[in-house]
Length: 434
Image (cartoon, rainbow, N blue to C red; front, side, top):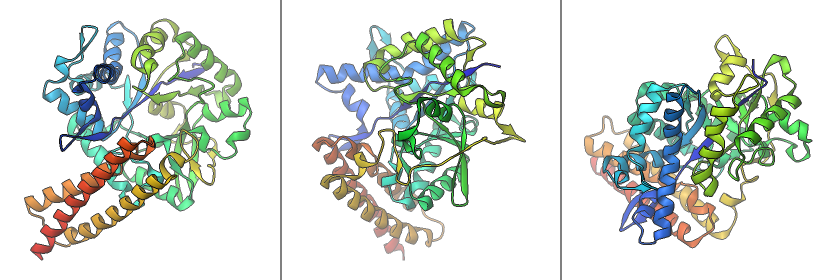
């Protein structure tokens, strides 16, 4: 049994933006930019999305056993699929390496090496759950699953057991948290990952207490709801996004094991998680400085790797159910991977868009009530319903308010207006029928 299990996690997302009157993926917009820096950065980002599948395939061909956790927003999966199907990525390269069909490569690797890459579910358009109307949470969860199923198939979807909250945003209100847990579990998820910053009294934790918390799964309770959770390691322990070479990761994992002291004979779990494409390290350095050398030179009997679901079921499984040995309490306000909720809920423009989203959600649900009472919908009605729902979910994308920039606020405003038109169209179709 290893002393520690290292599990790198990469979070992938690009929002939709307006270009020539149409919503397209931000990556596509950048790839077509006349600004050479934007266009080059887009190629590097596209390569970053490809890298996990590419390096898993290369390392397994050499007899190694790479492991990685990934989550992609639904809108990014759709954008990559569209770019691949239209051959746009076949024409793009990074230092003469063609990028090619990223989704096609993932289909191959997920089928051929199902234990190497574990995909986690997330929300369709990267909504920030604490700032999104509760009535829409289920739509975000289910629309992601529909997208993933369409691209990768039912078998691949059946292996998706963990959940990533965008921006790691978790509500503090107990009723809201219970509702979120129930929503996630109803969709078939077994566990979720949380930021240490959301844990009660985290600011006063000692170094050892922090490591003990992140080295094991916990049970999170809210009202009558509960779910197993794991906790991402702190940035000041392993800062994956700033860079930590394979030797450093190995030594940090051994340190976690020393502090954790193999409680119950179980290894310490070490999960650094970060954006997978944001910044120079993740676009250019992570795989050659950390991922490849760890699995080629460092992984051994002391520090190994496996995906999170395999770890949980191997070491915390009781009759097929994950049973953590400790409970976790969250701060009364919840939290995110930047600490609190201010990047999504504070400031005049953010509040303005939040009010518009709330009204938009109410309009959709009023139209939805009429739609549901109308009996079997026609093809045109069903199309109008799906378009209105997806437009609502896209309008709730967190990026439109996160950056506190006029460009992104404008994207949010345009998308809200677009969604309003789609919802009005749905309502008009249904009212004309009745």
